[in-house]
Length: 329
Ligand SMILES: Cc1cc2nc3c(=O)[nH]c(=O)nc-3n(C[C@H](O)[C@H](O)[C@H](O)COP(=O)(O)OP(=O)(O)OC[C@H]3O[C@@H](n4cnc5c(N)ncnc54)[C@H](O)[C@@H]3O)c2cc1C
Figure 1: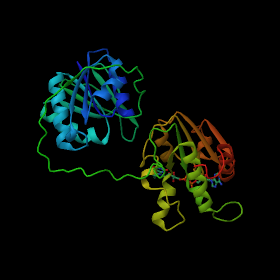
Figure 2: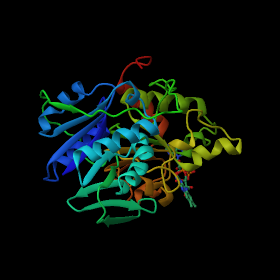
Figure 3: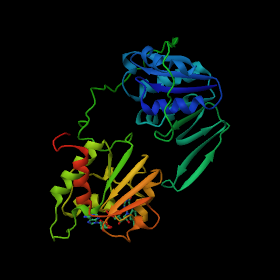
Figure 4: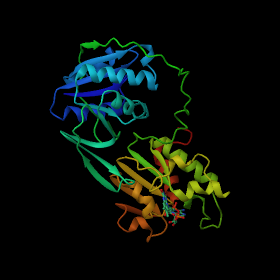
């Protein structure tokens, strides 16, 4: 018996967990947590699962006490030996405590789940490990982006609502402060990762540094293509060293050994040398291209599928023309 724990409305990461669970060949229960479950259940009604829900205003926000109470009730009511949830901030925070409450075990960052075992990466994605456990219920947090989302048809679903008394809470969720979507340049669901390297802020062939032009070209490109923006370490470190910087880049953008390991279908590196500590972060980017003036850069040594030996300023200016009129974004 497998339980998939999902928040409502169901996110892409949630649909990926559902898709993964449907392939395990066991009886499936979907446990929904949120303000109202019916619409979410109908949206995935074709998956053939039994639907349980803990719904109501207290469960509409991410908060340890209410999330843990809801998940515990769902696990107990389902009788599942295996519970899968997306490895998002919400479930990473709540489910380890739930594993203790139900006397089970938990593993996080799983990238593949098979009957009886899970796979995950360790040591900055260098070692891949297969784990099996005897303890039940076994809770598994599945890494977003490591598989396809469920794409079945909606259908009217019968939802069994669990009567869970909301626990006393000390945490009042007053709202979410988030950047405007147009300012948010880290986009995990984008098909393309665009990476900027330190070359953008170096002296160019005319002897000038053109940081503001670089900023404009890069932002224009990522906003018009909907790409996610990444950076090399050298470029984001420059702000700490008092050098010319691109103001919209932070250490959260850094891709690599000491940065992130994003999962995008395609990647385009620009003005970035392609050194091993950077490229290790490209492990899960399937199709890689790079733009560099130097035909002997790291990308040319088997690290990219295509290297454009070209001036990235010129390439992005041409791309801007092809993508539409300035001011369109
Ligand atoms: C323990 C350790 C961990 C590290 N972790 C990371 C990490 O997580 N992420 C990371 O990025 N690095 C990491 N590094 C650093 C890494 O080794 C490199 O120093 C860094 O990635 C270099 O950044 P860069 O390629 O942007 O800059 P540079 O090496 O300065 O390369 C700039 C490139 O821009 C090109 N260029 C310049 N102008 C143009 C133009 N107009 N058009 C096209 N190309 C142009 C140049 O030819 C050059 O190749 C780590 C290093 C160590 C030792």
